[in-house]
Amino acid sequence: QQPVQSPQAVILREGEDAVINCSSSKALYSVHWYRQKHGEAPVFLMILLKGGEQKGHDKISASFNEKKQQSSLYLTASQLSYSGTYFCGTDLFGNEKLTFGTGTRLTIIP
Amino acid sequence: DGGITQSPKYLFRKEGQNVTLSCEQNLNHDAMYWYRQDPGQGLRLIYYSQIVNDFQKGDIAEGYSVSREKKESFPLTVTSAQKNPTAFYLCASRHSGLAGSAYEQYFGPGTRLTVT
Image (cartoon, rainbow over all chains, first blue to last red):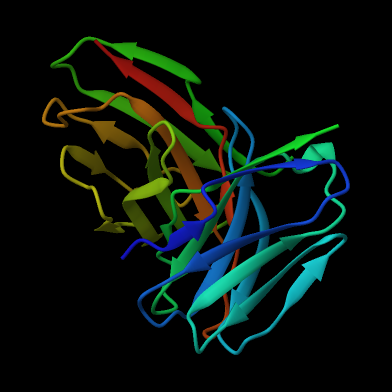
């Protein structure tokens, strides 16, 4: 079952904040977040395991709400380099077989 | 430098021909994956392998085949049975570690296949 990402696209000015959501209809073992620039390979951001743990580095953080089966990615004080498409990948059983959402396209303008 | 290599970067084939995409990793990872990405879409899993000489079908395996004879290599063959093969193909690998943990997938640069 493919997770649902929202919004599908967002445009921000440099310095603004963004939240990207990833929702599943099934119980999740883990959620993985990646960023992909056009024509390039996805780059790993972070993994969240069930248990509601919040993670972050620099100005990008994420949370996992186990009750809602939803993960949110937070980008604060966005930089031009944050532009790209963000994908969440969900693992239902801990077997590292990920199902990816259709992505959220983030555009940062000066 | 450790990483994943995919070759070629661009590949053109005539309809009805089989084509094999290469994926090699020197990260000593046990698990390897093949994904397909269409414009504006997410990544869809074609096949994955968690150990040498073993692999499992993903969500869209029809028209594709793989082999895993060596830990470092996981080639993907797009057969003539694949009805719409034009896409961006990504290979990934992952460390297999402790149960109860999760590990990131490392992606190769991708191969863009065009079939006409």
